Amino acid sequence: MRISVLLAELAMLLLAAANARAQQAWQPQFDALTVLLRGTWTMPTTKGLLSETWGQPNGYIVQGSSYSIHGTDILWLEHVML
Image 1 (cartoon, one colour):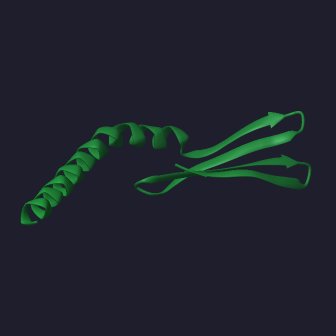
Image 2 (cartoon, rainbow, N blue to C red):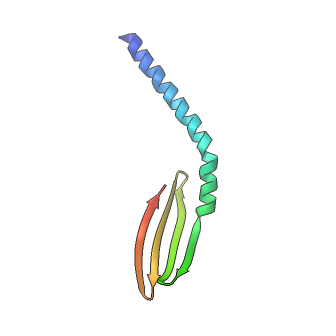
Image 3 (cartoon, rainbow, N blue to C red):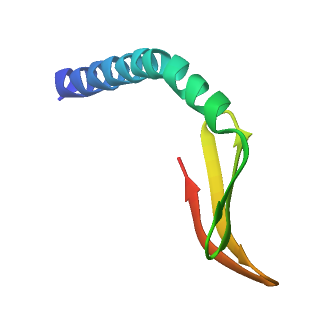
């Protein structure tokens, strides 16, 4: 019984170490993505103005919202969290 507990603890430690290593591997790509997306993007169309706003509320989440403006009407399209 004691051996199975030790093996479970060892497996948890190995998984935690693998997770930390994986996070370090993807962090540079995530940082580059946030630099590219951050800000407000607009595109005029025949139906009005399409706009997206992207930000980073904390170090691990990037969120964006998009909406369409036609005259005085504003239509919210989506909210995304990555």
